[in-house]
Every structure is written in structure tokens, then in C-alpha cells.
Length: 254
Image (cartoon, rainbow, N blue to C red; front, side):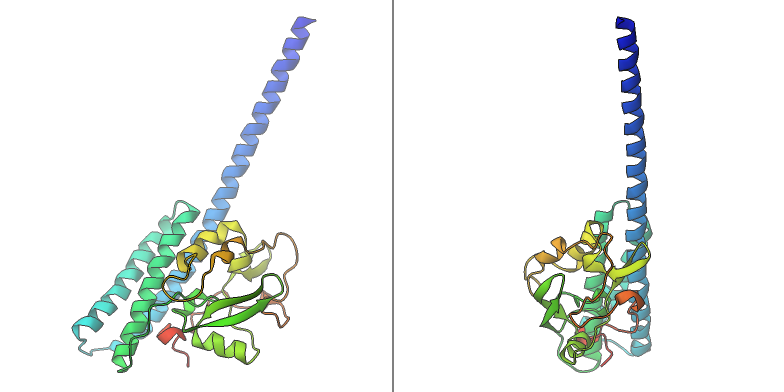
């Protein structure tokens, strides 16, 4: 009888061991999928910034830049090269925080170059546009209401702020979740490092405190409708936002 119990115990241990191996394998696969999603997010932000920087290069042309403008321009170029190098080499999802902080630094430097070339005051250093960080530094804080998040004060570029004032939908940075595209701030914990890279948890560097973004509701499997408070499906919104140049916090589009 004892030997039967021993065999049963050994068999149970073996089953438990197999289950642990399967769980560990599934966990590795899931982490690999999440890392690939974050790398794609980083790559697209880098690509958009590169396009914006090339357009700035067309504006600069053969002009002779003064020292401070040249320094800002070089800062933007260096940020692009650094981010382009880092994006495909991300080894953990948390590393995207540093990468997008680099991009935010480069976009602000680019805005400063545009301002100086136009003979305008250099804008204050502010966090990026909440609705789409690819738009560059925000210009002011606006009141925004979402059925899922409630009413918040968020930083917005001039174009997005104008669209909200006109009760129009701003262009939102979205990510792919299964078959749906959703705003990055509601895409789940795996994308929190992306938000943290662009937005501090306090009111540093201009803009309001954004700690709530890191605990925003996860969509899970529920269908997503209405992210602006005005109704509508975000499914058709473009992932990019490359039409904005990041000029003066309004993407240069105004």
C-alpha cells in the first residue's frame, strides 16, 4: 500500500512540475509579445519624430544658425539618433520610459529652433500634448471629460485645445489591443512606462499632475466607444500623427 501512495505522490509532483513549466513558458511568451508591442510603439514614435526633424531641416536649409539655435538643433538631432538606436534594442518594457523622454527632449529643442528662426520667444518647457505626445510640447492645460475617467485637466497642444473648444475630437495616440485600437492611456499596465516617460507624476516641467494616468481603467475585453465625451468610435483614428511638426506646442499645424 505504501508503495502505491509513493507512486501517486510522485505522479502528483510530476504533474505539478509540468504545469509550472507550461506556466513559465506561457509567461515568457506573453512578456515577449508585450515587449514587441512596446518596441513597435517606440519605433513609430521615432519614425514620426524623424519625419518632423527632416521637415525642420528643410526649413533650416543653408541658413547660418547662431550658437544657441545651433545647440538646440544639435540637441534635436542627437535625440533622434539616440532614440533610433535604442528603439530596436529595448529589452524590457520599462525601458521605453527613457526612450520617450529622449524624444520629448528632442521635440522641445525642435520647437525652440522654430521659434528662434521665426524671431519669436522660446516657449516654456512643458510636458507633451496628452492626446498625442507626438504633437510635441503642450501649449496650455484644458478641461477634458471622458465617461471612463471623468473630468480632468490635461496638457494639450494648441490644435488639440482648439478642437476640444469647438467640440471636435482631437487626434488621439492609439495602440492595437487585439482587433481594436484604443487610446494609449487605457491600454493596460504594459503601456504605463510609455506614459511615465512623457508625463511626470507631479506638475514638473509644466502641465498638471498626471499620476492618475498610471491607474486609468484597463479596457479588458469590453468594447471601446467614446473617449472624448462626445461619443463615437476610435477605431478609425490613425495611429500616427505625423502631420504635426511639434512647433510651439501646436505641432506647427496652425
